[in-house]
Amino acid sequence: MIVLHQENIKATLIELYNDAKNDKTRIIKGLVKSIIRPMQPEDFKHAYLSITEEQGLFLVDLIKKNKLKNIVEFGTSFGISTLFLAQGALETKGRIITTELIASKAEKAMENFKKAEVSNIIDVRIGDAMQTLQNHKEPIDLLFLDGWKDLYQPLFNMLESNFHTNTIIYVDNANMSESRAFLKEVGRNDKYMLESIFEGKVVLIRIK
Image 1 (cartoon, rainbow, N blue to C red):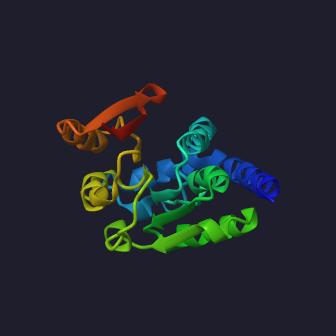
Image 2 (spheres, rainbow, N blue to C red):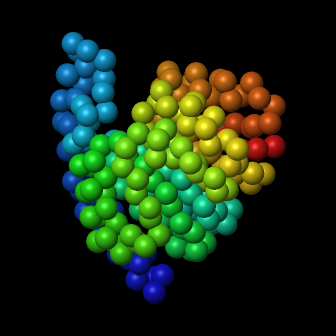
Protein backbone atom coordinates (compact mmCIF):
# COMPACT_ATOMS: atom_id res chain seq x y z
CA MET A 1 0.00 0.00 0.00
CA ILE A 2 2.85 2.42 0.83
CA VAL A 3 4.44 1.70 -2.55
CA LEU A 4 1.17 2.63 -4.30
CA HIS A 5 0.90 5.87 -2.31
CA GLN A 6 4.51 6.74 -3.15
CA GLU A 7 3.83 6.23 -6.86
CA ASN A 8 0.73 8.44 -6.64
CA ILE A 9 2.79 11.16 -4.94
CA LYS A 10 5.51 10.96 -7.60
CA ALA A 11 2.96 11.21 -10.42
CA THR A 12 1.30 14.24 -8.79
CA LEU A 13 4.67 15.93 -8.25
CA ILE A 14 5.56 15.48 -11.93
CA GLU A 15 2.32 17.26 -12.90
CA LEU A 16 2.94 20.10 -10.44
CA TYR A 17 6.55 20.66 -11.46
CA ASN A 18 5.48 20.76 -15.13
CA ASP A 19 2.94 23.47 -14.29
CA ALA A 20 5.50 25.31 -12.14
CA LYS A 21 7.75 25.80 -15.18
CA ASN A 22 5.83 29.03 -15.82
CA ASP A 23 6.53 30.32 -12.31
CA LYS A 24 9.02 32.97 -13.43
CA THR A 25 6.29 34.81 -15.31
CA ARG A 26 3.93 34.54 -12.33
CA ILE A 27 6.59 35.82 -9.94
CA ILE A 28 7.47 38.77 -12.19
CA LYS A 29 3.80 39.78 -12.31
CA GLY A 30 3.74 39.71 -8.52
CA LEU A 31 6.93 41.74 -8.23
CA VAL A 32 5.61 44.42 -10.60
CA LYS A 33 2.81 45.13 -8.12
CA SER A 34 5.39 45.72 -5.38
CA ILE A 35 6.92 48.65 -7.26
CA ILE A 36 4.29 51.03 -5.91
CA ARG A 37 3.73 49.35 -2.51
CA PRO A 38 5.20 46.66 -0.23
CA MET A 39 4.93 43.04 -1.38
CA GLN A 40 1.90 41.11 -0.17
CA PRO A 41 1.20 37.35 -0.15
CA GLU A 42 -1.78 37.91 -2.48
CA ASP A 43 0.64 39.17 -5.15
CA PHE A 44 1.88 35.59 -5.55
CA LYS A 45 -1.39 33.67 -5.27
CA HIS A 46 -0.79 32.08 -8.69
CA ALA A 47 2.91 31.28 -8.11
CA TYR A 48 4.20 27.99 -6.75
CA LEU A 49 7.36 29.45 -5.15
CA SER A 50 8.27 25.81 -4.59
CA ILE A 51 11.32 23.99 -3.33
CA THR A 52 13.47 22.15 -5.86
CA GLU A 53 13.20 18.42 -6.41
CA GLU A 54 16.67 18.07 -4.87
CA GLN A 55 15.47 19.81 -1.72
CA GLY A 56 12.37 17.64 -1.67
CA LEU A 57 14.34 14.39 -1.86
CA PHE A 58 16.61 15.70 0.89
CA LEU A 59 13.54 16.27 3.06
CA VAL A 60 12.29 12.73 2.48
CA ASP A 61 15.68 11.35 3.46
CA LEU A 62 15.86 13.65 6.52
CA ILE A 63 12.48 12.42 7.76
CA LYS A 64 13.31 8.75 7.23
CA LYS A 65 16.82 8.86 8.72
CA ASN A 66 15.69 10.73 11.84
CA LYS A 67 12.36 8.87 12.14
CA LEU A 68 10.44 12.16 12.22
CA LYS A 69 6.68 11.74 12.70
CA ASN A 70 5.12 14.98 13.93
CA ILE A 71 5.64 17.51 11.13
CA VAL A 72 4.47 21.13 10.99
CA GLU A 73 4.79 23.12 7.75
CA PHE A 74 4.46 26.89 7.38
CA GLY A 75 3.64 27.72 3.76
CA THR A 76 1.68 25.05 1.88
CA SER A 77 1.34 26.90 -1.43
CA PHE A 78 0.03 24.33 -3.96
CA GLY A 79 1.46 21.44 -1.96
CA ILE A 80 4.75 20.46 -3.60
CA SER A 81 6.81 20.59 -0.41
CA THR A 82 3.95 18.99 1.54
CA LEU A 83 3.92 16.02 -0.83
CA PHE A 84 7.63 15.45 -0.24
CA LEU A 85 6.97 15.65 3.50
CA ALA A 86 4.21 13.08 2.99
CA GLN A 87 6.62 10.76 1.19
CA GLY A 88 8.78 10.71 4.29
CA ALA A 89 5.86 10.59 6.72
CA LEU A 90 4.42 7.51 5.01
CA GLU A 91 7.62 5.66 5.88
CA THR A 92 7.64 6.78 9.54
CA LYS A 93 3.86 6.53 10.05
CA GLY A 94 3.85 10.25 10.68
CA ARG A 95 1.39 13.10 10.16
CA ILE A 96 1.63 16.64 8.80
CA ILE A 97 -0.02 19.89 9.83
CA THR A 98 0.37 22.49 7.10
CA THR A 99 -0.91 26.06 7.01
CA GLU A 100 -1.56 28.41 4.09
CA LEU A 101 -2.76 32.02 4.18
CA ILE A 102 -4.32 32.14 0.71
CA ALA A 103 -7.50 30.06 0.53
CA SER A 104 -7.36 29.42 -3.23
CA LYS A 105 -3.88 27.94 -2.88
CA ALA A 106 -4.87 25.78 0.08
CA GLU A 107 -7.92 24.46 -1.78
CA LYS A 108 -5.81 23.54 -4.80
CA ALA A 109 -3.26 21.88 -2.50
CA MET A 110 -6.02 19.78 -0.94
CA GLU A 111 -7.06 18.64 -4.43
CA ASN A 112 -3.46 17.61 -5.06
CA PHE A 113 -3.28 15.68 -1.78
CA LYS A 114 -6.50 13.89 -2.67
CA LYS A 115 -5.10 13.01 -6.09
CA ALA A 116 -1.96 11.64 -4.43
CA GLU A 117 -4.15 9.77 -1.92
CA VAL A 118 -2.41 11.20 1.16
CA SER A 119 -5.17 13.48 2.49
CA ASN A 120 -5.55 11.17 5.49
CA ILE A 121 -2.14 12.14 6.89
CA ILE A 122 -2.30 15.88 6.12
CA ASP A 123 -4.18 18.47 8.17
CA VAL A 124 -4.53 21.65 6.09
CA ARG A 125 -5.23 24.86 8.00
CA ILE A 126 -6.24 27.98 6.10
CA GLY A 127 -5.40 31.43 7.44
CA ASP A 128 -2.71 33.34 9.31
CA ALA A 129 -0.27 30.79 10.75
CA MET A 130 -0.01 32.78 13.98
CA GLN A 131 -3.67 31.90 14.49
CA THR A 132 -3.93 28.46 12.88
CA LEU A 133 -0.99 27.16 14.95
CA GLN A 134 -1.68 29.24 18.05
CA ASN A 135 -2.98 26.37 20.19
CA HIS A 136 -0.53 23.73 19.01
CA LYS A 137 0.55 21.77 22.08
CA GLU A 138 1.99 18.57 20.62
CA PRO A 139 5.71 17.74 20.19
CA ILE A 140 7.19 18.86 16.88
CA ASP A 141 9.78 16.60 15.26
CA LEU A 142 10.18 18.73 12.13
CA LEU A 143 9.22 22.37 11.64
CA PHE A 144 9.39 23.37 7.98
CA LEU A 145 9.53 27.15 7.50
CA ASP A 146 8.78 28.29 3.96
CA GLY A 147 6.18 31.04 4.23
CA TRP A 148 6.28 34.83 4.62
CA LYS A 149 9.73 35.53 6.09
CA ASP A 150 8.70 38.15 8.65
CA LEU A 151 6.76 35.41 10.47
CA TYR A 152 9.71 33.05 10.92
CA GLN A 153 10.72 34.61 14.25
CA PRO A 154 7.28 34.95 15.87
CA LEU A 155 6.28 31.45 14.72
CA PHE A 156 9.51 29.99 16.04
CA ASN A 157 8.95 31.73 19.38
CA MET A 158 5.32 30.59 19.57
CA LEU A 159 6.10 26.94 18.82
CA GLU A 160 9.41 26.70 20.70
CA SER A 161 7.81 25.07 23.76
CA ASN A 162 6.92 22.10 21.52
CA PHE A 163 10.54 21.42 20.51
CA HIS A 164 12.48 18.52 22.01
CA THR A 165 16.02 17.14 21.83
CA ASN A 166 15.60 15.66 18.36
CA THR A 167 13.56 18.47 16.79
CA ILE A 168 14.82 19.80 13.45
CA ILE A 169 13.81 23.20 12.06
CA TYR A 170 14.22 23.50 8.29
CA VAL A 171 14.54 27.14 7.20
CA ASP A 172 14.02 27.73 3.48
CA ASN A 173 15.11 30.93 1.73
CA ALA A 174 17.67 31.34 4.50
CA ASN A 175 19.67 33.75 2.33
CA MET A 176 16.93 36.42 2.30
CA SER A 177 17.40 39.44 4.56
CA GLU A 178 14.55 38.74 7.00
CA SER A 179 15.58 35.08 7.22
CA ARG A 180 19.17 36.08 7.97
CA ALA A 181 17.99 38.37 10.77
CA PHE A 182 15.94 35.51 12.23
CA LEU A 183 18.85 33.07 12.03
CA LYS A 184 21.21 35.60 13.60
CA GLU A 185 18.84 35.89 16.55
CA VAL A 186 18.51 32.11 16.92
CA GLY A 187 22.29 31.75 16.65
CA ARG A 188 22.74 33.91 19.74
CA ASN A 189 21.16 31.14 21.81
CA ASP A 190 23.72 28.49 22.79
CA LYS A 191 20.89 25.95 22.86
CA TYR A 192 20.79 25.80 19.05
CA MET A 193 23.26 24.84 16.35
CA LEU A 194 22.85 25.93 12.74
CA GLU A 195 23.91 24.06 9.61
CA SER A 196 23.89 25.77 6.22
CA ILE A 197 23.13 23.62 3.16
CA PHE A 198 22.20 24.08 -0.51
CA GLU A 199 24.78 26.88 -0.82
CA GLY A 200 23.16 28.89 1.97
CA LYS A 201 19.62 28.72 0.64
CA VAL A 202 18.62 26.40 3.49
CA VAL A 203 19.63 26.29 7.14
CA LEU A 204 18.88 23.43 9.52
CA ILE A 205 18.45 24.34 13.18
CA ARG A 206 19.04 21.55 15.67
CA ILE A 207 18.99 21.47 19.45
CA LYS A 208 22.29 20.71 21.17
